[in-house]
Image (cartoon, rainbow, N blue to C red; front, side):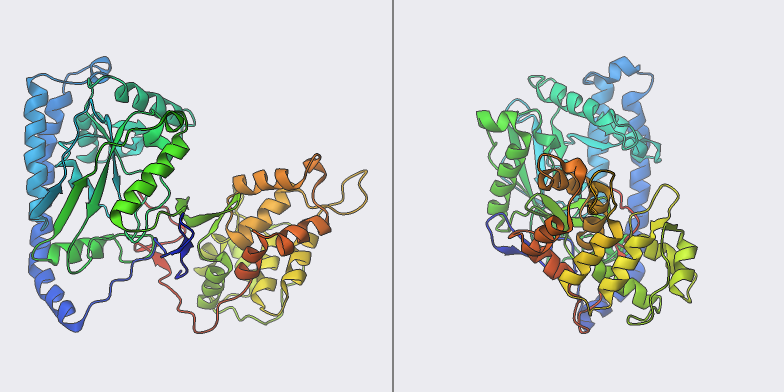
Length: 501
C-alpha cells in the first residue's frame, strides 16, 4: 500500500497508514544487545507500577453512588488519588524510557478551553500527554471497563464511555460532552484524539466531529517524538505492538514533545457546523506541524480517502486479493469455475477455486462482502477473478459487472442495476462503504432511483464521469509484477481483524 492520497491543498500527500522501519546492521546489534536485558526489565517494572495505580484509582470511586459519579469529584479522596496516579504514571513512562517530556506553550484553563484535541495520534504511547495536561478526562469504549486496572483507571478518570453495540450510546456521549464542556469550568477538561486511529505522522487523518459538536473553544495540542529513530509509531501497516514496545524499551532514552497551541475560538458558522469546525482545526494543526491535512480515515479495518461523494480504499482491493490468492497458490489465467450463482461459504469458496491450503478461505472471504453467516456472493467472486485475469478492458469489466448484478423488474423490460448491485460493485472494486454507494446511487438515479440504472447510465458513470472514471481505470489495473507486496499483517494482526483504539 504505497500510493499516497491527495491533501486538502490539492497536493499529493504520503500514505499516512504505512510505517516502514529500516534498521542498519549497527542498530540491529544495539537493539538485540539492549533488548535482551533492558527491554524486559523496563516492561516488567512498568507493569508493577501500573498495578500500583489500582488501589489509588479505586480510592477515588469506592462507596460512591452512580449519582455522585455523574458530578465532578473534589474531596480529599479525589486529591490523594489524582496526585498518586499522576506521580505513578510519570514513573511508569520514565521506566519505559520516556525520560524527557518537553512542553512548549501554555495549557489553557478549563474556562478558556473546555476541550483539548491532540494530533497526530501515532502510537499507544500517546496517553503520555495526559501528564502535561494534568490528567484530563478521556473518551473510551465501555468494553474497556472490564479490563483489569484499565477499567479502574477509567472510573477514576470519570471517562465518557461509548458502546459500539448500543446505537443510542453515541447520542448519549454527545450530550455528555456538551454537558461537561458547557459547565463553566465545573468539570475538568476533556481530551480527544480526533483522528480516531494511529497514523505515521507524515499527514493528518480526517478529524472526526465528536470533539467539536459542543461548539466551544478548544485548545489544539501537537505531539512529536523528536528521536533519531522512530520506534514508537504504530500504524495500520508496520511493526506490531510487541515490536514497538520492544524497540522503544530498548532505546536508552525516548523524548516526547508536547506543544500547546493558542486556543481556537470557533466562528458562529463553526459553532453550529462541527464538520467544518473539525476540518478548519485540522488544517491549522497540519500547518503548524508542516504536514498535509488529508481526507483519509479508517472505516472498519479499511483505510479510505474521499473522492467526490465517495470514500474509496487507499489501495485497490483487487491488489490485496491478488496477493492473497497468490499466497494460496491460485494461478491467474487458469480456467474459471463454472456456475457461481447464490452464495458460497469459505470452504465452498476454497473448493470452487481449487485451492490447496485449508487456511486460505477465511483470509479470502474477508475481501468480499459477507452475509450474517459469513458467506460471500458468488457473483462478486466471479467479477474479481475476471478482473484479475488482466486481459479485459474497463469497458468489458463494467459490462460484466452490470450483467452479473442486474435484474429485470416488472414493467421496465430492459435489465437495470439495483442499488444493492451498484453498492456491491463499488465495494468490491473501489472499497467504497455501502452507505456512500447508496447515497451516490440515489443521486445518479435522478427522479426515479428505484428503477435502477441502465447499462448506459452505469458505464457513463464508470467510464466517462470526470471524477469517478479515473478511479475505475486505476483500480481495475493490476500492479506490475515488480510491485512490492507489503506485509500481509497490519500491526502484527491480519487485516481482517479490527484494532483497538
